[in-house]
Length: 170
Image 1: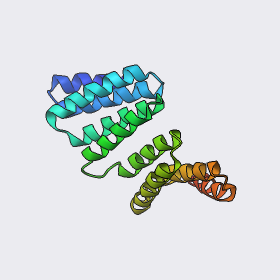
Image 2 (image 1 turned 30 degrees about the vertical axis):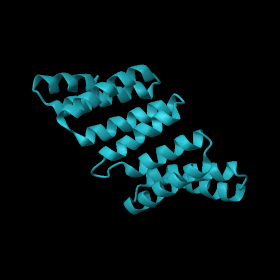
Image 3 (image 1 turned 90 degrees about the vertical axis):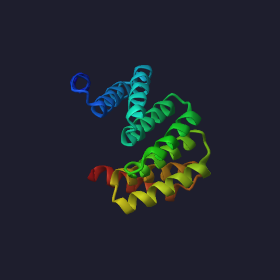
Image 4 (image 1 turned 180 degrees about the vertical axis):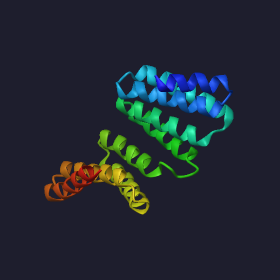
């Protein structure tokens, strides 16, 4: 409801950036409840509007969100493509660590553990530098999952325990 109001107000005052970002948020509202078709409709509209005004922050966000939707739908290659595009638009490096993690997760779902491991390690290194505990927790989860799948149970437990501690602190 708030995103819809923001869209209307932004249109009324010709605030294109606000409109594009409100449309992105509306897409996320549908994504959260699993209506991926509606989410993609709004994400695509946001991308179109953001492209017109060359808003790299909005483009990074919307491509990231579209990549996550494709990942949820099991279309991992398309998700990886869009998440990678998201990083190209992320000129301020605002979401690089979580995007690297999400690309790694798509590779994990594809059962390509070595590539997933590479992305998780990249994400973890950047997240530690930025003190991004949320992404660090995700990375520990991912690394624990890889260790578990490789039957390295002690290492898996160590990573998953670290993730749990971070999640509890967040």
